Length: 326
Ligand SMILES: NCc1[nH]cc(CCC(=O)O)c1CC(=O)O
Image (tube, rainbow, N blue to C red; front, side):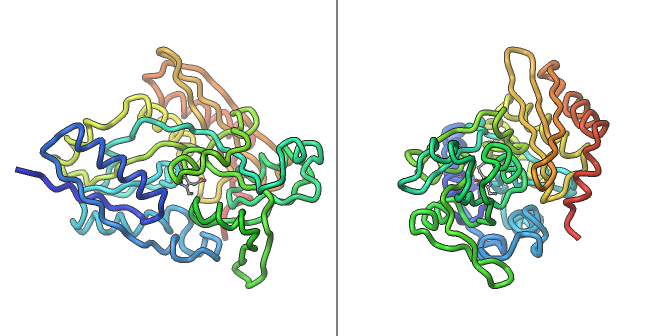
């Protein structure tokens, strides 16, 4: 007897690769399972021009429609990039039932053909454009290449690559155009999942660019009452990922971040200790508030709370409020 498991996902190349990974891990963990991938086109995907805010930010744009389908009982579970899941609002009735083993958490630099990292460094970015829509990446990019122009650039990972290579401009919400981009900053995990690893010119170290909370972790969300599904998902839950997830998301929770908050949080486990670093950046990249602590790896929320409170002590709330969408 086969048990169907209906897994909801967005239908971008990256999202499908992540969902196929879940399906493969479930089949390997329990041969009686028959994972089925149910594809959704979300507002966040179909509208590639607007900033995400009109759709309720990342959480609203990408996560809400699939969550609603789960709550209606149409799905057993759903794939999310943990990074895209808001941490400052709970969805009653849903739980993160599995976090897969983490892929690299770092951000990477991708360059158009003909441009080298040396040239970008030597020029301090002068005369070049870097495409990203993340305030965090923009702020770090400005610190690394002070004279670079950061331009709004969004779309699925594979379509960003195509726009870079074809030297396409990016249309803006008000009808104007920016670009083309000379370089992009994207998550290494996403680049790997869409098959463009050979285009990576540089992996940023955590000192150069601290990743977003949850970056590189695929999460499976599930209705709390789906006991059978939860039991199966427990088989593919990775303990270390879960600890990092809890620590990094606690920082977001303490800071009451919003979808556009310039917050970074990244944890590393060594033996039975965890080191958690987090930062809050102001929009122009002029101000970096940072905190780092090491503590027992099996107390991730305590560590997250300590680091979050230290950031607040150092003035993080004012910076976060400044960037809050109207
Ligand atoms: N916002 C889109 C998104 N959500 C998760 C990833 C990367 C993969 C991951 O962090 O698991 C990306 C693309 C990017 O940030 O470049």
